[in-house]
Structure formats: structure tokens, C-alpha cells
Amino acid sequence: MEKAQREDCLIHCITNPISINQVANTILALGARPVMVEHPAEAEEITSTASSLLLNLGNITDVRMQSMKISLKTANDKGIPVTLDVCGSACSSLRRAYIKELLSEGSLTVIKGNYSEILALTDETYSASGVDATDNTDEDMIKGAVLSLAGKTGAVIVATGKTDLIGSQGTVTEVTGGTDQLASVTGTGCMSGAVIATFLAREISAGSVISACRYFKKCGEAAATPEGPGSFMTALLDCLASPKADLDMTLYLVTDSTGLDENVFLGKVRSALEGGVTILQLREKTRPTNEYIDLARKVHAIAREFGVPLIIDDRVDVMLAADCEGVHVGAEDMPVALARSLIGRQKILGATAKTVEAAKKAYADGADYLGVGAIYPTTTKVKTVLTSTDTLDAITKAVPIPVNAIGGLNAGNIDILKGINISGVCAVSAIMKADSPKEAASALKRAFLELRRDT
Image (cartoon, rainbow, N blue to C red; front, top):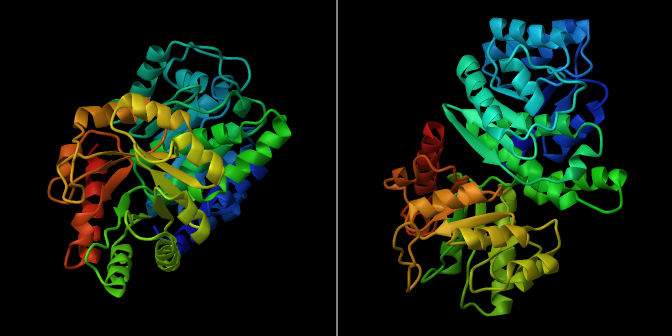
């Protein structure tokens, strides 16, 4: 999705005053626009113009309860995704009864709560004191509750905790990571709901919800600081607002300029971006440094027109000189930890991983995403080391950061990735060697989105 479209996303929030400021700032940090309207007379009008609706039961009042019903109906009529944060449902019979009313009157896209809150919605005998989750480490019981609630409501269920559990269509995805500091300040649970609602404004899918949970945990990790809770909250908002906040891994193009005149090459890049490429990597293994920098600046200017981040393959010096959004390092390139120390925490850092062990190390050393492959033999490298889909699947489950598949993939063979929770696909020849990069990119992106809806 292009930057202009992202900024057009309006997120209507009916939420509690305790964290309303944090929620609004979270949405702004993600490049969308918040509106915090709760008067019943305005609810229908405002919701009808929104891209996503967020309902939060914290500090509930009669007025907000009335407005939520109005907005839920409007959102359902307009096909607008609805996220319900069931804050406090474990300690309040009023809120549990109200949730039943909402479910009887409309449909929800996502139901989000901490472990205690999700358990309380599936077990009438369960209760907790206050709005915080109890120290319940029986994840199997939580998973059962998630699956049960997903089956009954048809919604994607998000149970947040040390490990977020996301349930949809009979499966539960685990998202690990984060930091204990997220519990040191008020409102981070509400902020995570805002991240989910904003991601849903861009794509309505279980995969989008999973990506939102991963992103929020990753930002929490990056923001962790010994300075204290005030500094942590500031750092958390800074991380949410970094270029990583706009990272859409759906269609990742790695360029290949071999044998191409510069103008032809730049034309192919533009055509691919017109076709829906969401992240772009410039790879020039043999080009002299000064020419590499010059080309990077030209490609970056085009990428900016589409709001797409430009990643430089391997060369941190080129990335810094051209002021691009990030760098990608391969297994034989600069170590991930060293690259992170050189580029800082605000820049995007990608890494290649072919094993679960390598993926875990890259994540621990600071990688923001992984490229995994080759899935099929390719013509872009002399030697191709294949990666099995079983290994790809294991990697997606082993790390909480986005994982993309690469290597010989195209719209005709992408079905091999069905059932694997990847964030997107990488392509080189399928797009760069196509007569129309725009059409090739559009077809591959469409095929992946259809695959993800079926996953």
C-alpha cells in the first residue's frame, strides 16, 4: 500500500480516557489518523468514514456502550474491520454481559484481551482481580480458550501475554518476544489494540493481525531501556514511528540490472512498483562504490514516490551515503550484530537465514526480518542452496520477526508455500525479466494474498 493511501487510513477509536492519548499517538506513529469520537449522536457519521474501528471496554460508561453498538452496526454495514479490546472482562460481569450483547448484534473481526480476559469469555466460573492478567502459565488451556472463542464468534482471537496466541480457522499462531517493560507503564495493552486496528485498515486478514502483534513486540524490545518507564514510553513511540512501522513485506523485489541500460533498468523498477511491490532491495554485487551510490540515489528517488522503503544489499556504506531505509546482509556478508551497531536501531536490517539456528541468531543480533531460501533453483546465483518448506515453516515459528520466502518463486508455483505463515515473497527474475514488470508484480502479489487468505 502506498504512503498516500496509508495516511488516508482513519481509525475510529471508542476507548477509555486512561490511555486515549497513547492510543492516538500510536496510530499517528503508524502513519494513520486517529479520531476519538464517543458521542452517540456522532458515532454513525464518524464510523462510516473510517477505515477501521477500535472498541475498548476499559473504564466503560453508558455513553460509550451506546456508541459502540451504533458504531459496530455501521462498521458491519460498511464492511469496516472491527477490533474489540475486552479490557477488564475478567473482573467485570457487566463487561462480559455487554460483550455477549455486542456479539448478538454484530460481527467482530478481532477480539483481543490478555490471558485472563480471554479465559473469562469462555469459562463463566473464571474471574480475576483487576485488569491485569494473572500469572497463568498453562498455555495449553489458553490455546483451548482461543480456539473455542474463535469457533464460536468467527473472529480472530488475540490472547496477549509473554507469548501472544492468535487463533483463527482452527489454528493458533504463537508470537514471542517483547519486554517486561511493556507492563511498567499504563496503556501498552490498549496501544497493541491500536496497532492491530491500524494494520487491519491496510489488510483484513489473520496474517495482518499476526504481523501487528509481531511488530508491537519487536518495537517493545527495541525500546527497552534502563532509564525507566518514562524513557521507555518515549522510546516505544519513537520505534513505532520509525521507517519500520511502514514495513509491508508482502512483495519484496530484489533488483537485477545485469545487461540492462540504466534507463531501462530504472524503468523496470518503476513498472514493478506500479504493480504493487511493497519493499525494494537494490543488489549490485560488482558495481564500483561511487556508481553504486549514484544508482542507489536514483532508485531511492523513485521508491519514495511510491512510499516504498529501499534496502541496500550488503553495503552499509552505500546505504548510509544514499540515506536509504535499510540494509540486507547475507550469510557471508557483514555480521548482523555489526551491521546493527553501524546503522542504529531506527534503520531496517534484513538478514538471510537457511536454518532455524541461523534465524534465531540473526534475530538475537538485531535483524528486523529474514529472507529464507532458495525454495526453487534460481538463475541469479551460480550456486543455489535449496531450503525445504519444512525448514521455512520451522523458521517462521522460531522467530517473532517477519519471514519472507525467496528463490525461483512466481505466481504459478507459489502454492508450495500454502499453510506456512510467511510475511511475504521475494522475487528477482519473475519480475525483473518479465516483459511487463508491472503485470508480473501484480500477479505475484495477488497470488500471495490469495494464498495468505487461505492459510
